[in-house]
Image (cartoon, rainbow, N blue to C red; front, side, top):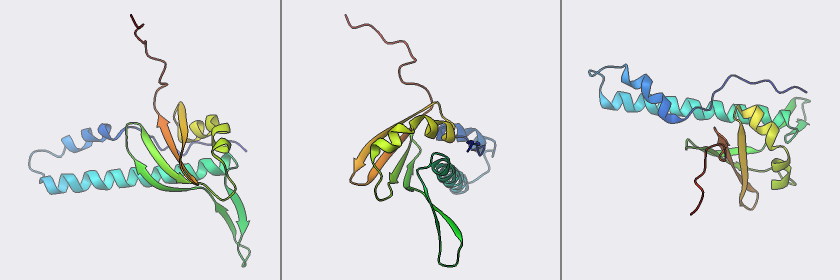
Length: 146
């Protein structure tokens, strides 16, 4: 199975500010705030859909059939999205899954989410935090301690 990008970008929320600058001075603040919230909500829901597609591609989701014979995919559920930076997903794992399962597939998760790198950390019993890292943390020059 090949992973195909859904075209959703995981750009930081700050980059959406450009869209609201072009509204002009006459646009009321409540309308600009509402548009910003709608854009953020749309971005978060696209990120959740991208997560579900990625889980199916990494085989961390389970395929089942209902009593009527309808094919159904059960993926680890995203409970919240923090726009960051870095963008962070709070995910509840499916029964029987371990944090190590996700860490072993982290390179595929990063590819499916359209970022160079992800960090997966345990959060609570049955929960993980997925940090979508836009740049590699050690790619920048580090000062040498004196």
